[in-house]
Image (cartoon, rainbow, N blue to C red; front, side):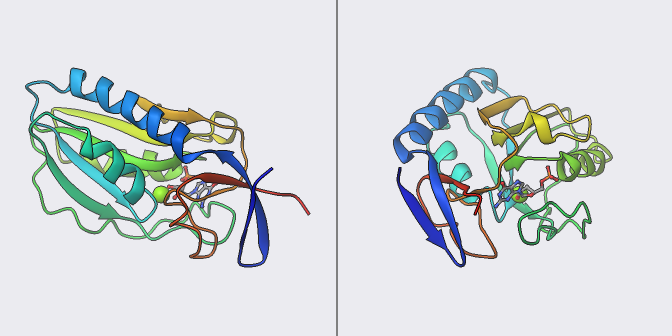
Length: 179
Ligand code: 5GP
Ligand code: MG
């Protein structure tokens, strides 16, 4: 079993780069089909979704706009649930078809708060595409429209996801090994 060390913890390989690539391509196909003629605006949730978004968006072939937004809320290995201000949103969402690209939906608190905020801006349609969904960890009403992988409630690094700032650059996804 391939493992990596990130700072003081070891992580075991869970999803290979190849497997992620295949699944992201399938999602892009689905989104291309659904978004035909809709001129969507993709909102990429920084920092974690940057790699997922880059891979997915390279395969999006409908005319679209892309913008980047951020809440700075995550510390260490547990979701804090405390959320700061939303930054980066300059575009008007009014009557637009909006697709949020997220790395992980865990408790769902981040996305449920974001969606409340985005809905006040009156988009015509609002969708959520997440690379990873952890249904067992869900504590809110969030239902992602596009899911790369359903995973158990484990702590992940790689493919954009960090452990204390490190590991985002890994091309595969790894899970925390219990010590
Ligand atoms: P929430 O609990 O609000 O659904 O998730 C908040 C954020 O925590 C996610 O957007 C993601 O950035 C981060 N997060 C959730 N689960 C994990 C994980 O397993 N590993 C890492 N590195 N970040 C996670
Ligand atoms: Mg995130």
